Length: 547
Image (cartoon, rainbow, N blue to C red):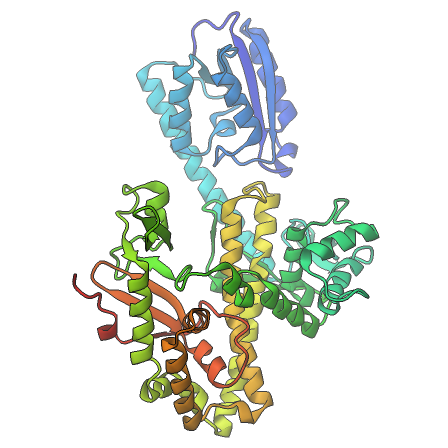
């Protein structure tokens, strides 16, 4: 405890994590009242009161806390003491406590807990550090028990209380014992919105097809609102990707503290009333995939280099895994593929590598010609699509069912973004959000390619792959890859190659069996799939030649 605080300038910091805490003895008014009483009793001066509502102390990403720290760091130095009800109101992370306690000392600011009276000697500092560790442990234990309860609640088909998707509302369901639980039901006042969005996106307007940005504008012109706010591209995207509209919502898809996605086998499906048909939903997903400018036809317009977006730094653990981008040397006379992370962050992050562009292009193209397009290798790669028996057809139908289930899981992943943004853990403009969405989109497009292929094969037996087709297809590939027309060569390489891992001693080329099967069966390759079953050119064709 500080010996003399008379005349010291004090700020009170009060915080609650949840609305439920406001009903307990650590409510905000109680914290403020105790702080004001402490200031009056000790003859100090109350400079300001900071109130943080609905924010966890396990992170320092709290707007009010950040505003208080800006005041601490200001040139005027207007604060002598930060006063809290207990240390856990300010920190539930021991590392944050140690970091900020050191910074507060630098600015001459003391930290005082009303309910935890310690001195300012080394022994007291050690005791406070131990207390911070205990608070962190207690917070983790509470989170574990809360999560277990919420998972059980979701597994029983109940909603855990966050904002429902538009078109739904949460209603209380009385329970024989304990408090009421909530279930999602269709909201008659807003159910027309998701139906209108899906139907308009798939079928267009009287003026023809409509994209997502134009759809958001069209909704706003009509006077539609999303909980009182105008529509924009991102929330229309999220609605189109949400599987709740075909009867399956999901809980436990992410770890909010670690800000990472959980494995799909940990997701908990919650049955809800469907709002649209599965046919309409999957039509929307196929349309989104085809129109995505980062894939398919749009990709060829934006990526002019043969392996841009395909080449990765490292093979067999000797690189960082970052994308390799175009770089130049000798005033632009030489072109290379170089590690993006090394370019952006320097050699302390990755020692990097730089590979002559033409040399890598030729190595990859020659490996494809020599080891992928031969009839024996193509037959091996396409074996799953060569079967003609009724059992093979049954297997295709089973695979189709599995793929559609996987699409449902992946589509629902987009709703995670809503939860993270609404909980204030991320900004809608955060690059990590964009990366997450891009990864989900790539997986969805890959599965859409699988589904497209199998559906075409089931619908038209003439499209099924035969040994004769494999031989002709291999010859066609060799001609196109070795041909003089660079744009055509690039299209075939990008169709067949998913990733090129560039190491110091080895280069590994990885591609998609589905892409081969789609091309061999005559399905137009309008979507370049990613994250699907892989082929690898044989190792002896991928060795990096010695200089």
